[in-house]
Length: 145
Image (tube, rainbow, N blue to C red; front, side, top):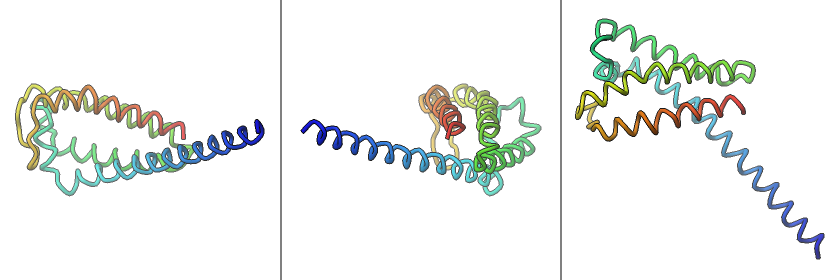
């Protein structure tokens, strides 16, 4: 009886570990697709990004947008090989930290339209204090896969 219970528990643990591994892989590949799309979007709809660049950087808005797109695509591709994954994850974290002034600018700007979506100060706070840390942790976690 005890042996049967142990077998059932052990089988459940193995099944759970396999499910967790699959979920981790899906999240990892989704991160790659997320940054590939984000980088690509800088070139397809640059007008989406110009309003979120703080005024003190407005003279270089076009260059910042292009550089951001290139960096996001490169970092996404560097996540794929295991030997560059850690560097890519650290690069994503640095990039996300570099974007913090933009998020602070969101808050200062108040309500504004970003495409067809209205950004409110509440959404800006959520994006800065919840969204950015989640993205940073996601990148860090991906370096461990």
